[in-house]
Length: 71
Image (cartoon, rainbow, N blue to C red):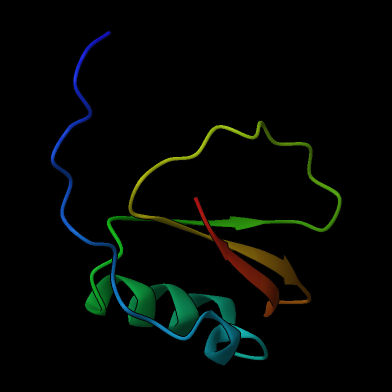
């Protein structure tokens, strides 16, 4: 089995603080805090459970972040 990569720590960030923000402002904030990949998803979007290191996901409805999670 191959060794695990030596990945840097993900940003130490309060994910709950993104809830309620306008989606574009939330994405700008996330990138400024060190998240390398930010994606906005509509409620109910079907996604894989593949974890991507450094990615922050937003569930966005009516232009506002409703939920936020890593991976």
